[in-house]
Image (tube, rainbow, N blue to C red; front, side, top):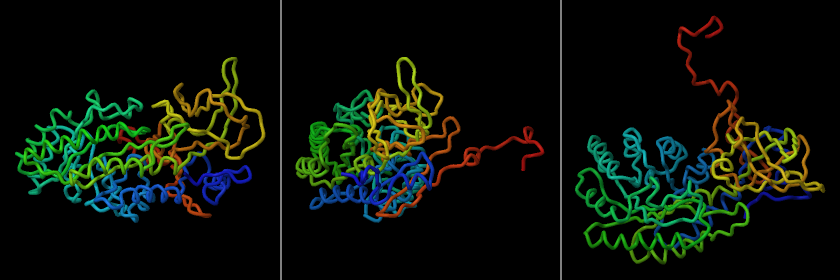
Length: 423
């Protein structure tokens, strides 16, 4: 459930007309609903109540500082994959003891910063990385807390680009090799074994892959115990899908109840990493129709948001519902909804049936609160868009639209290219 609803033909974010926000901030822009974010946070917290657990939000889904501040105030931790995400999480007030650090390419600098921040643990992706963490921690006279990311070779049944739990992908250690990884970790002097991590993919809409992978990891933890290796935390990752179109994914309560029943015998504290399920349906992208174009094969609706603003349709052929912000009684057409980027892959929807629209009208791209702005870019020298947070009948610009000056702010001109006009 979200709080983007039509009232008398006008789309509202909570108690504010989307059209009125567009008049003040311009288009395109992302808008997030505070009430929806809170609803989703509480759904996870309630599902985890009664079992030792840590709820770590996946910053890759949405890392706006205001959104992270909401999560921090609710006591939520962070799942991070870069030094930049560590910086954002700490600036938002998230405790280091609630931060887990994943990702296959951690640098020495990032590892040092995470150790200084006192993170809960590194989710280690390879033996080379494990040795690097040991070396860096030794130079700091510290012990780095670690878990190994174990790849259970489970097909998540999602898009190949967001499937992570099979041998053919770059993530984690195959379960058959992970035992030797833990034996290595036990021999190293500057790491401390804390847990086991698994994450099989994103936008999962069925329970079976979650549960099958959890059972494999629990069996693996039993192996570790027989080796005398104590495991305190089991990080089951994230990946719970949301409804973009006709999907009916499990609710957090159903998923977590089933996972807890599998994990309980281990005595491990459960760590979960939701991202999309918190923010996906808590945000929309608002765009304006620039032009209508027709040829003998197609209708095109050309809008001012492009693949640089929302890349998911171009990258994954992902589906997002697209609706007029103001509903009118009109015939429907089949059209490609495309942006201004100079790429044939620049589209928000293809062959989409939608109400006939006119120049200047607003469209809402639904379910865009996760992996929207965080994946945006300045391609074609386009300033990144504004982000807005709505709470009740007020809205707040939580990231202002970039200017043209922002595009060249960090460029540096060598002396031999400077002119009299340069300062």
